[in-house]
Each structure stands twice: as C-alpha cells, then as structure tokens.
Length: 372
Image: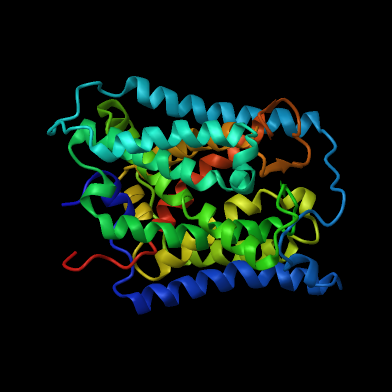
C-alpha cells in the first residue's frame, strides 16, 4: 500500500498513450482560451508567442492598500492554520529504518556551494558560462535534499524509483512552459540577461532550467513529510468529495476566465498560478485518476499542505539565488508590489502555495508504473 508522497502522486494514466492524450487535453484547455481572448480584443497574436519573452510594454503596478491588506490577511490565516495543525500534531518519531547519507548527497552539497559562489561572482574566466549556473545549482539542491530524506528514512524518490524520478525532469520542463505562456498575457515577471540569445537558444537553455522544478519541489515535500509531526498533522481532517459535475463546472469556469485573462490582466493575474491547478485536477478527476482529490475524500490534506510548504521553501531559495545572478528574473505585480524579499514582493510568495499542489498533481501525469 502506497503511503506519503507515493500515495499523493498515485498511479497516473494507465499507458503512455493515455498520458499523452491527457496532456493534450490539459494543453488545449490552457493554451487556447487566452488566444481566444486576444482574438476577441482584436490584438495581434505574435507578441505572445515570441522568444525570448520580455515585457511588451510598461505594466501598471500601482499599489493598493485594500488589495495588499486583504491578501495579507488571507495568507496569514492559511499559514496560521498550517502552523497550528503541525504544532498540535503528535510529535512521535516517524517509524522506519534510518538510512545513511549517500555519496551523491555530498556531491549535491559540493555543487550547491560551488555554483552558488559562481552564480554570485563575476570571475572573468567564467564569463562565457555565467548565465548558466541555475541548473547545476538546482541539481545540487535536488541531490542534497533527496540525500537528507534518505538519511532520515532509508529511502527517497531518487533511490526508490529512479526511472520515474528522472522522468520528472522532462515533464517539469513542459510543465513550467505553461506558466511562461500564461505569463505572456499578464507580464508579472520577465528575464534579464537573456536578450542576446536567439529564440532557439532561449528555448533550449530555459527548458533545461525548468526541468529542475518538479524534482526539487517533490524531493522537498518528501523530506518535509519524513518528519513525524508533519506527516500526522494533516491526516484525519474534514473529508471533501468532488463529483464529476463539480469538476466539469470548475473546468468550464476556468476556461471562460482564461479567455478574459488578456482582456483584464491586471485583475486576473492570479489565474497564472491557479488555472493549471484547476484544469489539471478537473481533467484528472473526470478521467478517473486524481490521487490528490482521492486523498481529500478520506480526510488526508497532506497532498495539499505539505507540497505547498515545500514550494514555499523552494521559492525562498529560488528568489535568494536569483537575486544576485547575472541572468535573473524581475517582477511587476499589480496592487501588492511592496516590501520585497529579494526580487519578489513579500505577498508574491503566496503564489508558491498553490504551485506546490500543482507540482504534486503534475507528477500524476506520468504513466503508472507496471504492476501498480
């Protein structure tokens, strides 16, 4: 019987063919509606499809105290609930065999130290490779956090299912491109230091960088879940069940909202973070395999809260390491663009909470292993 992150990821589609069809449905539901909105607005399509993808024009980011306070209250409430559930949880050590710290964990630690130093330095001899430190830095993080999990439990995604774990890398690249695409319509972030790249070079180097996202968040989620208090904190809560009718309704409302995204980007920009979650979860539920929603049906909110915390933790390091790198991203977020922690406005970190759930759901797009 699967437990922990294996249960949250669950068995995906029954075959590669089924997984491809499901991914095509998700892609269509996310890609087509915003373009329909551009067509309705009689705007040219090509600016949204060009690479590299810098901002097309200045974006209005006036500050709104009402928006800021409202979002702050909501975020603080969510984090308070999570903290309270963890604190009240039973703190008994998690049963299981403690493992060793594998050699590749040491390699990961060395990579983090080395490429963090190189990312923030400006050595003349390293100049040709300066903009490409993101990927090896995050590969080092993935190896290190997976090794820490292995040390605590004797197992981790990397050591337990290496082929499935490696498959997360190409899936991750494709997964993040959906966010890049949706960002074209709201311009909440843009990249600095990539203007000299051709469209092909940009797509290639960006895809390699994007490939580290899912392995990083899932490995972090598994490590967090290795702590007994965290593992028990979110079990036995209120069960929530979703019907096919509700999933269809969510899919319809999200699709209509995405049509409106390029028409009112300043107000609908949260859809960049919410729509992939809603679309993917709805389609998985309609196709009969939604591990996350199945866990909610038995009152297990672990696949919601633990990945959310994992993404928030990864988000801190993403923003930290980005802040002084040569090639980096910057933000233009409407209404709440105040009090930055690194490049990110402090309330922008709220986007990492649903993003963590999206990472777990996205991992469920992989075809189920044989015999499962």
